[in-house]
Length: 90
Image (cartoon, rainbow, N blue to C red; front, top):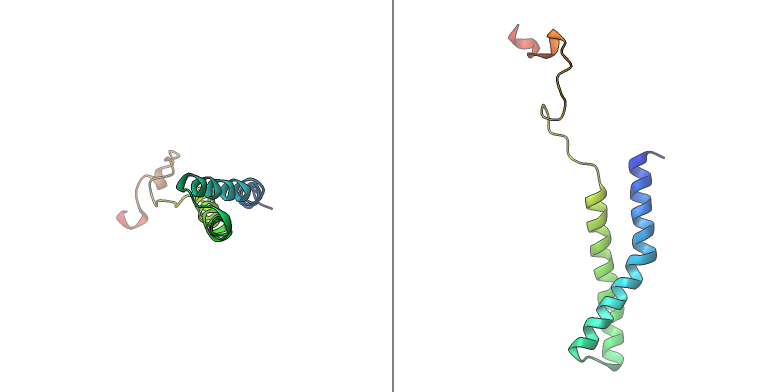
């Protein structure tokens, strides 16, 4: 398993173990603040909780994913004469 794959696995595991209960609690708390109670509150939490969790999970995976490589900007010159100019300009 590569380092990037292990990182994504850990983020997914943490998101499942901690993110799902926290998102359910957050939706339930927002319902309580809004004054929603009873069976309506349960239905809202059952639907909106996993939706919030899924959005958070994809957001965390997007942040943890590999960074796009910009051609020509990410690598320093190593000092060899062949690397200082493109091959077509010789």
